[in-house]
Amino acid sequence: MGFSSLLKEDVLTFGNIYIKGKTILSQKEIEKLLPKPGTPFRQNILEENIKKILKFYADRGFPFAIISPLEFQLDSTSLSFELHIDPGNIYRIRNIIFKGNSTTSDEFLLRQFTLENGVIFNEIKLQESIEELEKLNYIYVDSFHLIKGNDEGWVSILIFINERNMGGIIGAISYSENGGWSGKFQAIGKNLFGGGRTIELKWQKEGNTYQEEIFQYKEPYIFSLPFSLTFDIQHSYIENISNKTSISTGVIYSFRDFLISFAPGVENYAKSGKGGISYPFIETSFFYEANPFRLFYRNKWKRGRGWILEISSMASLYYLNIYSEYFILSSNGDELLFYKPIRGYPGVIASKGLKFGIELLGKFDQLIIYPLLETSWIEDFWQYSYGIGIKVNKVSMEYAIPFDESPINGRVYITFHGGS
Image (cartoon, rainbow, N blue to C red; front, side, top):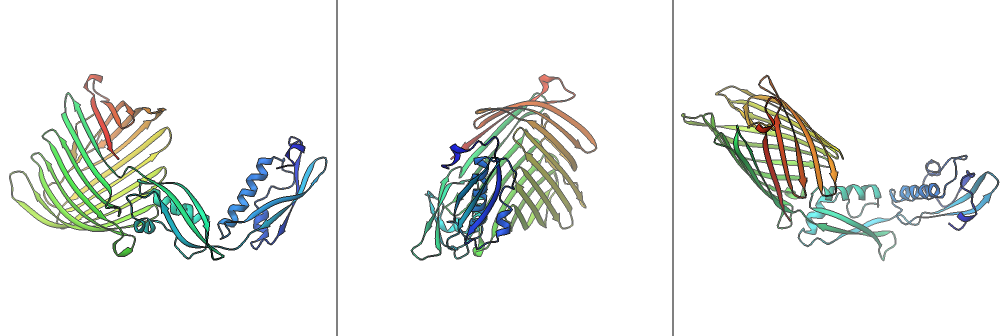
């Protein structure tokens, strides 16, 4: 501002600020956004308060408001002035235009975008809609611009986006002297045919003890509603205990940070050395994610066989990851068990358990070093492990050691990520 060179900000305070112009909106609400008389004067404070008022108008349909401080009165201790407000016209959204989406269809993006054509412009809702887009994890909004239409009171929103990470693979291997080799592989496509369809393949093996294969497919926005259709095939084998195959189809309802799913299906269970039986099941799950916290709940009821319950959570802070998991099953027939990986140990087979872990993150540009500690309660027995991990770009390596074992008896984990 032109008057700034005349001010000695270290001794001045704000005086009276008079609101002038056709404010339209509540003057009392605007005055709440201004510094009170007697507040030490700083030019950046004045500029920040003007930005707050501009946002106040933009959140209520006036994205092109103009605010000008005028008529300054300077005395020995304070600065008083007028704040002239020209809100302009109230604007409605004519249309939403995406630029940069070479793969993803406009139709799918508009379904994901919660702000609709025809409504009064609201900057808060625009930011919320951008956050919903970026929850896809392969759409990133670089910027947006407002374009006035030829008709007064209408505006178009031009959104520049960047597409990346639309698919990839994750592979991992681990080895310990006691447990031998294990590994897992995951391949995922997040945006098939540009319509947000997801396909996922998983494979995991722990020596000759355990093996699992999973195929999952998700078709979003059935009947243009926030529901996704899912199809799932799973097979798991636990040596000398069970051989299970299941098929299910279901729906997922998504709203902001929440996902709720309902999936009925059929499972075939065979105990080693015996014939198999088939029975229906219903699986329900709930997922919540709001940075930096995630919560997952799953319940699977099997007719005549009992039920299983899993709850897990994770908080990812800048220098710290904290995670926990609880699982339990109630069986009315032959024993049905979980297979669970425990850091530093071969995978365990159990009917109930609890895990809790902490990772301390040291970040050095592309390098992350993280000491780790994990404790587990499995079938009324406690297990503890500690170790250290190193991650460079898309490759990480961990060495985890059971607390009651020699450091040379630890387990090595190597994980790599690849994809677009």
